[in-house]
Amino acid sequence: MAKFRKEGEKEAKADMTPMIDCVFLLIIFFLCIDFKTLEAKLPAYLPKDRGSQTTEAEPIEQLSVKIVCEEFGQEVARRASIGPLRSRNNVKMVGHRVYWLVGPKKVEEMTELMDALKEIAEDPRRRVPDKDTGGTKVMPVVIEPYPQTTYGDVAGTVDAVRAAGFQEINFGGGMGTQQRSVGR
Amino acid sequence: MSNLKDEAEREAEMDMTPMIDCVFLLMIFFVLVIDLSQRDLEDLILPVAKYAVPDENPPDVRPIVNIAQDGRMVYKQNTWYDPARDGDNTEGIRRLLIEWKGTVVKDKDVENLGGRQVTVVNDPVLIRADKWTEWHYVGVFMTACSQPEAAFWKLELALSEDDKERKLYPN
Image 1 (tube, rainbow over the protein chains, first blue to last red):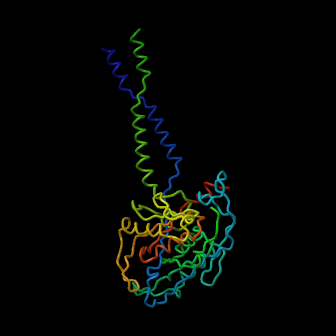
Image 2: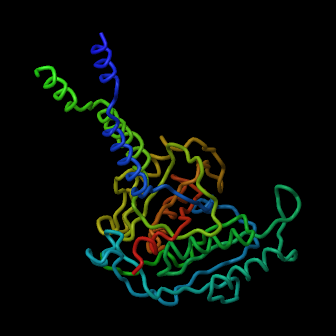
Image 3: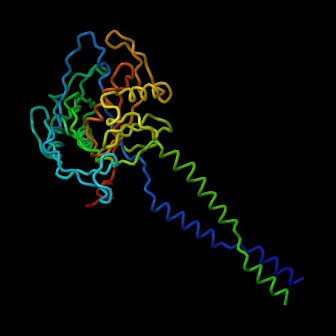
């Protein structure tokens, strides 16, 4: 009788080792995996009526922010084993420089740009009438990227414009659709 | 003697059930979570955001375009426009926008723009491009968006909160 009970007890014991192995594997997996989650986004707008406007448009007062590429820089490889191929998203720019024209004012550093934008956003004389509320609002901004500017330059500028307090950000044609010939 | 041998054999047996359970859970996890959530997002290095809004609770289906460094425009792992192949022919982008307009977006209004009835899309298009993608290609996509046939006017530019380029490729 006692022998049967002993055997029964032995069978009830579960071997936890494989489960612990798996749990550790899971932990390692979670630590190592690079989740490609999107972390942030910036809203912007395109003109609604491009290409179909037949009536006379009302002039709108807006702040023009031009992004001009001063130095395109040198393409180097992100992963050294592959080489600098744009088709594999393996290019990193070294020495890439841009400057901005905030209205007529030239600024060369991001901090300077922030200061210039804040100054305009906070200036009550630069506010424009708001048709929806009947009051006034911060003037819209039109961003005009010039040739050889990159997505990073423009996204960074939009980020700064929003941080300065501008709500309405539009994209102007500018000259950004001129392509620079680059190797693939 | 034979009793002792039986017990020794029994002890040597390994219970595989928990491991099989875990392996199945892992498989389910891989199949459902990783694949479905990442299909829209290409492996790009986004520029760093300092002040952007976090992308919390994104909808399951939304228009997302991934623009690679060479200008390829990818949606759900399909290339809709490749400058090397298509050149100035942006028909692929037009087809993508029309498909989104028909099946993906929910908020649309018919508006009179310049004396013409246009179905304007109020849902934003999320643009994901590599930090070093030339703006030219984003401009090509935006031009297609602003055509009356597509009429997407709200955009969102994707950014990253940490500098992945510096983290992954410091040299």
